[in-house]
Length: 310
Image (cartoon, rainbow, N blue to C red; front, side):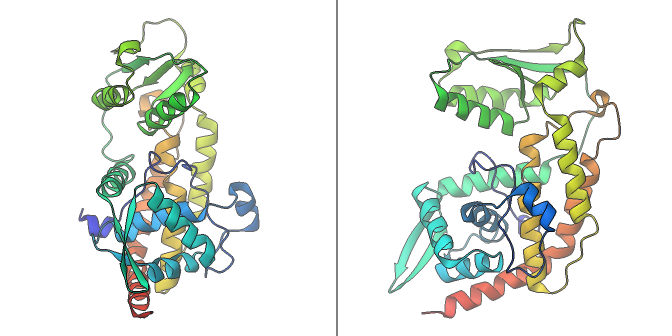
């Protein structure tokens, strides 16, 4: 699929708010129910900014005016002060760089920001696509890290979880997708843990129940509940008009982006019932394709308005 048609995504390796919670949207044309909003809370302006950058800025590869981003964030119910703070914070993290033109500022993705957004694009739009039969083998990683090294533990957990690994016991990580072996090795190498880590690939040895292993490694009940909420919210949601499609698409991507972080995308052989993940994925891709043209038209309008402001 053409990247400009599918948009992009900021992965959880960039954004430490992978839950996909979103901003209170009282100003938007379409909003969640009060019950739903209480459940998920309010996303930060930065989280919404990252989604907008991934969906509308990264695919074009062109700089964007401050006023354009403020207009787009405003459509999501985010006040100008919070929008400017989000821009400043994202730039401080090395994802954006600015160029001043008189009193106006153009923002461009840094090479680092571009790479992370591209990784996120591949992860979100490739997630739960092209399933293949499971060969019964597991990827197992042992990497003990002392409690005193909390930042390192957090970085490791964030990156391994993003790859779909789960941790049934401290220091042990597992995945039924052995294709992640090279990526896991890269994480261990990047974090300087090669001298204390060990991995292997093979079938289960017959001791213990795989169902118990899954329950210890991942909170599948929570993930299933979130999928059902996503389906209820978006499978039949309608949006009319450019602005409404823009809001709906950003909201949906905000919700969907958490699933590659939460769901290990287990093979059907390990699931004991009809898992709602594929149905949610179909809803995501169908609605995204339905809304994308009009959402981009709204973005173009934001861009024109932003370029005309002094």
